[in-house]
Image 1: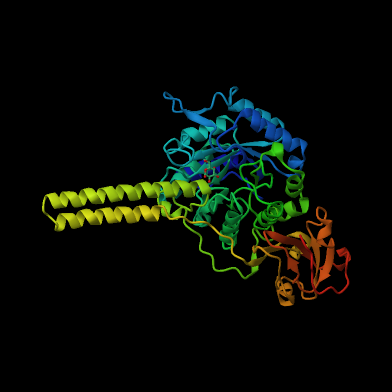
Image 2 (image 1 turned 90 degrees about the horizontal axis):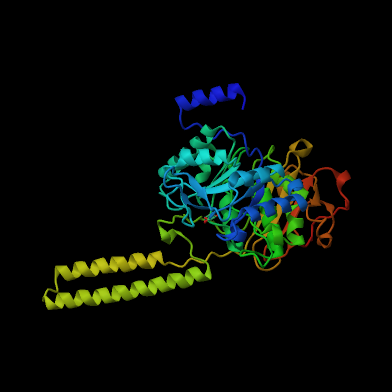
Length: 502
Ligand code: GLA
């Protein structure tokens, strides 16, 4: 770090201890891989992290721009009882974290780790509350480059959340090592303060199925104003389409999610097991035209819809301490929820009987009994709300997202047509006046960004005066780059419409 830089930071820290995160990182959205969706709590080991790094080099992901190899929860087994230092699971990391970071760095990649601003991580490993400075120093000593800081077992009011995250931010700043800080608080209200604290901030629940991809996109469509070089809205990881992974979507949805994350300038963090990546998924993840849209943030930091026939969307607050806010959607969660609800109902019933018997015995059917009954009713109602089953759904609707690109004097525009419905749809994705508003009054050359992978999807480029073709359902999409150059268009016949299929 330059001397002037250190002096400025030192003075600013004395005068104003909550100086913004100052690591110069994330000038474009980060790209990398994360272990959570593929490994969960199992197999987070040095051997597997190294294997991810090896694959990233050998299969072209590194060349495509992916840098971060991020381990998620479950790498730690506790704290040293004497020093309080975090302990990396000795059976998973027998040679220590420095050996792993050396390995990853020698491959030209960067190493990420996971923590929590509360007392425990979501999987019950040690959290950093009141250990922020010590943990930041540990991460710096291990030569970590990226920290995902989760929000489990923590206070959920905004002030506490920001205060705790700022403590970690300040602690990271103080180490002098440039460590990317990824806030993981699952709520859109992080966006406004996000840039002051972290390099990215999760805006919604885990994107671990197609409905949650929809929720993340609908949440993010209003947050474009908060994205800026250095700080990005984070709609969570990219899902693969390989069915042996714990989490997967269809190949078509996988491509659409990638296109959406690209136009939303979202972090591109692969949530698949790299060792079982399919050719289809690798092709998707290395489409340089689509990555180019994601990384092009000079003319517009994040895209947003210009057309949407989707219903008004209200994001649900994610709050583990108010479980009625927390969507219960997976089959096992539903079964568990019903089991607990049945147990609670049984207990309430027995309690009410006991209450009634006691009242009868004492021949007191008045105030005491009423209070007893009221308490039980409140308890039952609370449990019923707690158990509310909330299955997220995808609305049958269509959207056109756009993002201005910096090329050709910032006249080019990326346009993504997304069909959230289940069946193929033809709508006015962008009519002539919409194209005129985007700067193309005489029509535009529309380059199909997936053509190299899906030649059956139509022509590589064609001149359009409006965009109103058919897009298949179940996550179908078409991704164009619009420019005004007729010369670059392979088909300049006066086509009025597109009928590309994906
Ligand atoms: C939370 C986060 C996930 C993952 C897990 C790990 O659910 O949102 O992305 O990090 O915790 O326990």
